[in-house]
Length: 469
Ligand SMILES: *[C@@H]1O[C@H](CO)[C@@H](O)[C@H](O)[C@H]1NC(C)=O
Ligand SMILES: *[C@@H]1O[C@H](CO)[C@@H](O)[C@H](O)[C@H]1NC(C)=O
Ligand SMILES: *[C@@H]1O[C@H](CO)[C@@H](O)[C@H](O)[C@H]1NC(C)=O
Image (tube, protein in one colour):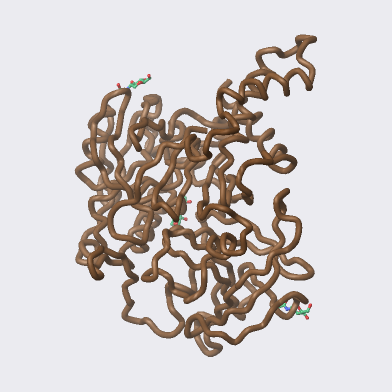
């Protein structure tokens, strides 16, 4: 039942988003999100070598930054690598990798469809064009609306513009945006890497910004297209989601839920005509989400804390089957991480509270296993509210193709023991880089956290809002 429900909601939601938008709400742009490389955890037995590789890559990514006091505040900066050259490794050779979430934007005349990757660790919006045929490349000379410019925004990037075509009721004509193009120097090895486009969504930070050009949200708000510098993400299942700029889909989700519930409850009754259902939905929405209520009343908010630059905040508690087993854990939100990372002490406490769990033997000892049949209820307490995480099978495709052990599982252990590998993984963060990054005590709430929730990031007010979907 739960998954049937979810599919209906998903289908309705997608049709709904395409056709309507509440007319007195702030304008918003809704874009489809896709996960590169398909779903992360599958029915097959977990490949521990692969999981360990992923964990290592994630840790390396965060270790490339450090905290520093600047004036009277703590900020985050990128670490220079030994082999740093003008082909900035933070800029090039990062596009087109699996396990990342991307959307599509239509750019130029005739419109080119570009894959655009979300990046929560930087505010920059730019495209990388290499001479390889790999990746999703923007062809400036193929666009009649390309506005050339020689302005340099980085040693290897200039700052032309082009017209972007958004499909939205609020936006009827193309919007011209600055669209920096970065090209690795011709002779370098990096020119063989993927082309691709990045859409940076970190809190504004002059220190993490690699290019001296405005972010996408800044451009859209400055041009009066959007009212609020906010963006939000809602993962609908293991491979798709919706990215919203300037707003959220909270109202659409709520309406869809009420509609599906009403239709199911009155299924087959002659009274339940389309008009009747719509009237019921409108009536119930008046109390669920009054039109006069401010958009942000529908989310639980927590302020961004810690070194300025990334989406870090405080999680008030971790709950297992109704008991609070950990409190006041600092968190970093990053949808591009397919796991949940936590400090060793916290992870041990977490699995000890579930019971029947075991730590895997080295070299996989960052992972724990739990009995697949033990469906534990996990909730993260944020802004005074308990948000259920990784519960149940989720969608129908999860039930059919997902891992044994439900959404908390990364897959079965291959030894036929009936144990599944848990999504909460110990971060090692050993070595001096980690100390400098200041993330050793952090939980990294990745993709498994986002599922089933609406999460909105407010770059103006420095806060994160969460809502159950
Ligand atoms: C497991 O993952 C490793 C590393 O990604 C890969 O080389 C190997 O082929 C995978 N094994 C299986 C059985 O898929
Ligand atoms: C870019 O577009 C131009 C004009 O349509 C075309 O001649 C050229 O081959 C394209 N370049 C690439 C790399 O696709
Ligand atoms: C948690 O609750 C589930 C079902 O409600 C049960 O199957 C499981 O054994 C419980 N786990 C613990 C550690 O109490």
